Image 1: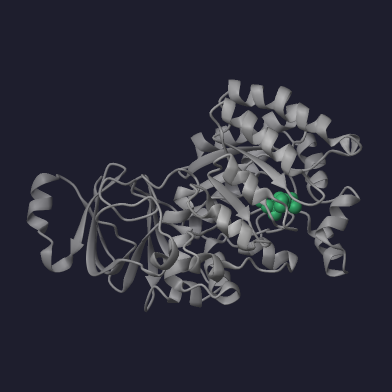
Image 2 (image 1 turned 180 degrees about the vertical axis):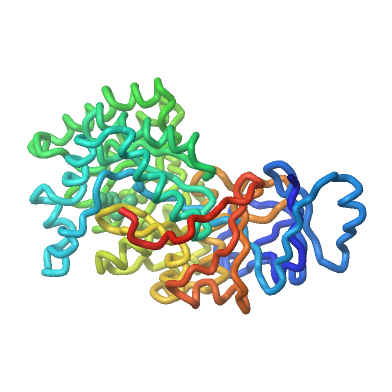
Length: 428
Ligand code: NIG
Ligand code: FE
């Protein structure tokens, strides 16, 4: 049934002529319409405007049944787009988190077989059904926070069998969940112990054994590599990105989280859709990103949880770059998919304006998933993935009121999604 949302206090992130992304100073602009209405038909946004211009009679004449929602005092946003997660996993890693509290670093934990290798062991033991069930709960949780599209990576398999298992799980999630989902093959997430003395052999396995099967089954929209100190080198990364392109699979890589790894430049060189993390971004990295088609993506949850330095986002935007933000939802470095919390972190820790943070989690993160033609803003013809807030005084309240859920009603693919009575952080 078509849906009319009327009396909207403010309709946020509207576009008359849709763009693929916003960059530099444009990031501080957030077009909105006050006292507005929005009309949804099928799974698309069909029309919107000011209440004073709403011709209800005409709408009801053209449509037999319309569900009318009165949004008095509430705002409507396009659903958030979370362009970087690892939310298929078999078990949380809260015990390692205690090691971290006691002083061990992320790299030290990884070196002794913890971290990603710990998750890989658990994935190898889990069935596809168990992984689907656990991931569906997490998906429902992120829906309740306003996320409408999500990228999910493999990378806790690290054997051909287990990587394929993870990607098949993601394929099932695409069918089962109302979220728009994109999958990323991250075979090169960590180097398994048995390859530590010859890591290029593992890269060979990723390229020559895993990737052909992933491509054959159509399991990946993107390919990823963790290009950083102690993980994969620039040479490994370039080999993998090049191999991906041979199958028409574009890169979306982990880069410069732990050091100036050269990952950003490698990503740009192979026209990656995004380079993500970016704590270590200097002038050379910014220069490489300018005039590229690669979306710099910052993951505040991971930097916050690991106590890292924060990516120089102001410097990047001042240089004219676009910027996307994502949750990095994963059991090791960011055990939360709450995108509203990411908005708050962006403002509090990175000094991003609410407008910049909202652009970074809507239109720009949609770009980072190759989806900005269909998602990421309120525009005629785009997919009807939107949410209605609780009664909030302004859109600035969204990042300001950190920790509380400001989303009341979620519409995905033009349908109202029943939110579970209580989903809170903590589902494992
Ligand atoms: O994006 N940095 C690499 N990969 C993940 C962490 C995964 C894990 O620790 O399980 C990340 O933070
Ligand atoms: Fe990640």
